[in-house]
Length: 435
Image (cartoon, rainbow, N blue to C red; front, side, top):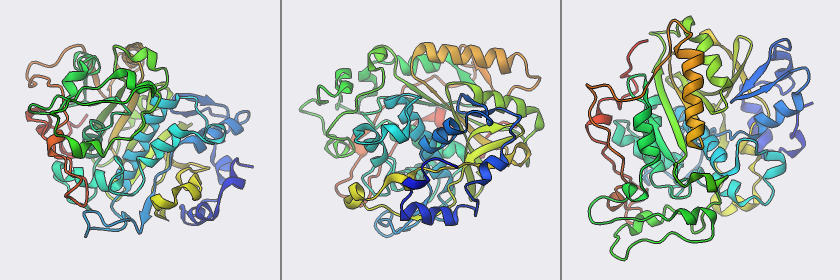
């Protein structure tokens, strides 16, 4: 019997009826009981750890299609059914990073959600309304700058680039986001990004938005200079700061959300990468994989034997209205069971995700990937270099262009951004080097 069945309200029941038609008790029958299960760096034995396995799945955010939200842009779509699946997968991966960032990897939804302000604030930032920072509205609109019209399907690289831009406006997260280019992770670039001074993340022009690290503890609010003109961007920030998990460790390192977009074949995935993908799920820094064919994306969170486990956003649920949020149960944002897919059915266009809370965490990840994948596999999925290739343009720290934000005059918050030559070279979901 699976956990949390009694917690599901009417909205959750409706979601069950449309979620691929899979019965809850089919999970145990689908698991290979002789093979271990790995979920984002955690190991489970199906014959012994089913309760822990259930709790781990239930704790993950499950973002699906929604209907009847406020029109995007005032006159745009009121549902993302049919086009928003990759956006929802990006939301799920980002939400997992934020849970790790603020509540730790071992946080449990069943015991930890009650009266948990941090959890509710994270969830609130993903609600389907125009002033939620990571809403479908914000992601779709930011995608316009990546060449995607509202209502157009995103590839995994595009959603990673959009998240990278949106996180710049999240002072609660105080998190660095890096999207690897050309199948290469450059250690020097990432350390420069994560160790950059707070001032380096200020606004363009004369506006020098100063962040105070002590505000992360909730004891002090963030202030800005009197001459700062970024009034509209202030509306994107909460009035209260989140208390971060192990914030005392972050004095010299900005926690890292790392995306690695890859294309692991032409029309289908190359079987040489199956083992490397499995290894990625066993790393404790793993946030999983987002990928899928156009209009059919999934969030892959682990594997069991020769099959992937994933959360599927292709269920349309009613939008939760913000004013009713406190009385509507949050069960519709969590799923009690995963879906299964063979490795050979995975589309070759993917983006890997990792979260490194500290510099030691990142160093451990680099060492593990080098030892387990780069040096062992005959065809590594990606490379890890200490320095940038000579033919690449210089690395530049991103800055938040707060003077371009206008959520007062616009029906949506338009966050215009230009990353310059470096990102322009690699900003298309189709621009991969075939491995």
